[in-house]
Length: 300
Image (cartoon, rainbow, N blue to C red; front, side):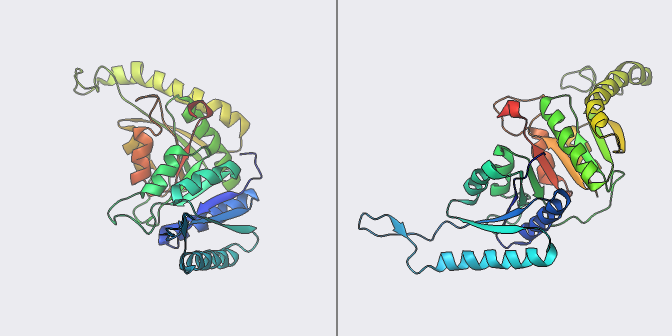
């Protein structure tokens, strides 16, 4: 990400948005970038009846929004005094405001869910919409990161499937690993069309078929995907990991305790008109680590 544009973080005062703000400030400190704290507050409008449109009759909504942003700025100055911070108040709905802010952003950070909606939802509609339609990398930060750590704890985990989107995810992942001085695990999940697909033979794959036929080809695809980025970032400690099974489940498991899980907006499967692939969608909803969705230019 060779950009001096700010990191934009959506803020509504909720715990997830505060976690998102902390993450954005930390990232800005690593990359020497400014942060824009964005709050979207559509006015509690009243129709005038005079052909003059809508207005906020007593200015309550505006005052509340300004106080919320002032609070956010105070928190930012306490948490990261060396990061330059500005605030932005937008009258559009939150998802619209965040997408519009991407025109002048290096990346956008959102909490897993905000104040509105249903408590049982894992990812709020604004966060999901932003990740689905983002034109820059979108980071979703979950407030609850409790739970046992997995074998890739403390590392960047990147999903690799050979697609253009996965290449962009690797590019982002290597940049993050280098700036954070942590290792990177490139994970490729595979299935056999003959044994694993619906209507296929099924059953256990013979060991010699897996070891001599299936795994070598999968390992080559994974290694070739990683090689060009490792050459550009030779100091990054890289693990290439193959998993026989479901890609989403493998990434969610590998993400336990990880610094980040990075996925492309969509992989090789599904319909090209779908903005967010099923694997990325599942990881967004269930990963306990922060998730970065990177959209390839070819899909925009």
